[in-house]
Length: 113
Image 1 (cartoon, rainbow, N blue to C red):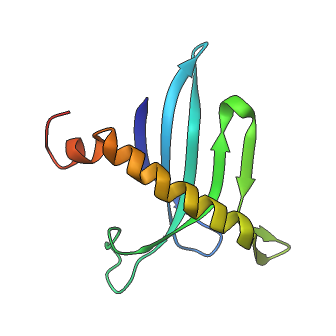
Image 2: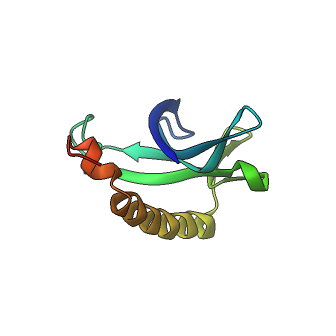
């Protein structure tokens, strides 16, 4: 499946949000399998996406009709679901390993597939 990484705007805390998603097509529709949107809290350098703190904001898996938010606004207050944050961080670590094993990192660095 294709891997798409893109900036999607600001998150609930005003930080940049990056979507990381695998996509496939079903009956002409693009399906996310899965997508995690991360708020990226860069350290001193605003372009420091490599060393910034990536915190999951939402998880989506279209084929299951699943959408979960870990951080969201409610009546002007930022709310956090800490257990879901921990679960998605654990999932993201495994997914990151899989993405590297599938060769995406090598291709992004200019190597062959």
